[in-house]
Every structure is written in C-alpha cells, then in structure tokens.
Image 1 (tube, one colour):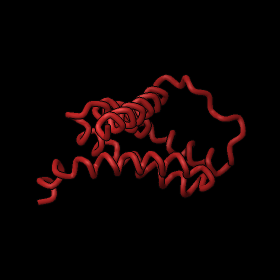
Image 2 (cartoon, rainbow, N blue to C red):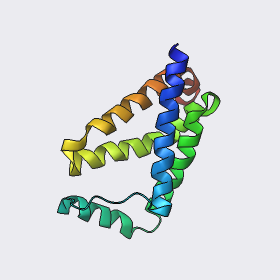
Image 3 (cartoon, rainbow, N blue to C red):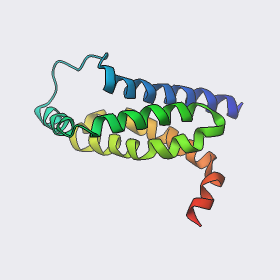
Length: 125
C-alpha cells in the first residue's frame, strides 16, 4: 500500500515539475494579472539572465521525468533538490503568504529522499 501511495504522489510531483519546466519554454499558463511589484522585480531580474530559466526548465523536466519512475526516483530527487530550495527561498522572500504548496512539495521530496537514503550513503562516504 505504501508503495502505491508513493508512486501516485511521485507521479503527481513529477508531472507538476514537467509542467512547470515546459511552461518556461512555451508560456502556455497565464501569469496572474495582479502581482506585487517586488515579485515582478524579482521575475524581471531572473529573466534578464538569458541562461537561467532554460537551465531551471531543463532541470525541472529531466528531474520530473526521473522522479516518476521508481528505478530513477533517487536521481530525480537529487536533480530537483536545488530547484526546490530555490522555490522555497523565492517564496519566503517574495510571497510568504503562499508557502503552503512549496512546503508540501518539499515534504514529498524529503519523503522520497528518506525512502532512498541507502542510495545516497555512498555519495557521503
């Protein structure tokens, strides 16, 4: 039962990151009409670096695809970890009221990494 729940959660998590990565390339999700100026300034600063958003998008897509499958989930989690740290820090600085979703995603990522801790121990030795 636990493996089925983990698969469903991993599938949804992976699909969310794949969607977010594809949106950075194709811009098919509309931006909110009213955004705080501080958030607009932060987004403008990130977009001014031409290489940053494509790099994040590729990491989200590759990490999301790897996260879906049990055999590659640990590698996908490692790829998504720095992106997730950036998401949480970005929301802490610019939108502290909207921290629920980043914390839920961080909890899922932490759960998967704890489940795969035996695969990470050789990296720490």
